[in-house]
Image (cartoon, rainbow, N blue to C red; front, top):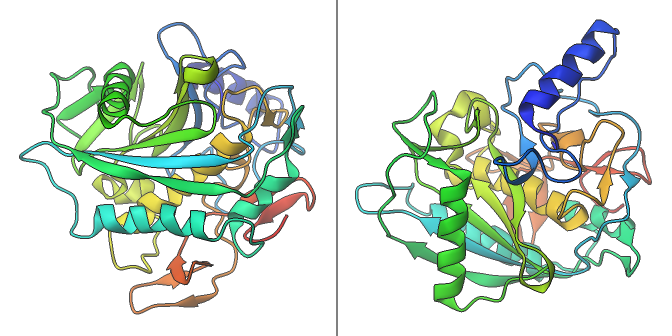
Length: 322
């Protein structure tokens, strides 16, 4: 979702008044949003939000190219910001890192949802399903004073505070930023975040964005702890038996959108929906079940339950191929 939520509501109201069949679900204009909101893209709206469609395809028409860059290859990193006194489920960080490692291990295969990105391109050619996992870190730096207020938590971090944390960790770890790397920032249970008046669990379950430009830009995704508000952000199936499962669903959403629209000027439809937005909360047909829940992806031999992604080639949501 690409435009500021306040803008989105105005546009939605206009479409509803006109009897439009599909409401828009984007949160930032092509330039990245009004001053002060930062460059926020691809926000996953809560599952019960009336704008979302649990089945079918959202937005309007196919994705269109708007002349910006895509990620031809990608390298992902995990940052877990977990100060003393806060926690995540046992196995949470390991399961998420396993997912990103598995996505990398299966690079080039047509058997999972990431291959659908390869139909999209920029002036330098098509996206390649060529992923790598650069590593992860648990940062126990204390949280700053609240930078915002949200409806679900007593600890709320602003987007500016999240950006400060990401930049500090990237520098401290000596990681290489740039247009081929994405940094996923995970916060613990009971911690919220906001950008302006748009807040975690009320208006989004995750979003992606960018800091800076050119060879030193930092592509990032804000990944709140989804089981803080399961009615809003739970995928309802946990094949790994862990709170990481629903977070992995929105990680996949943001990852695929960053690959195809890292700066908000590449691939999105007439209503601003990116490939993940058009298929949000649409999981397709399950492949099977573990003792903990259904799965619809087998990636590097491990089971996951993630939403489909939109395919221009099929004019529909897909879990495999293009």
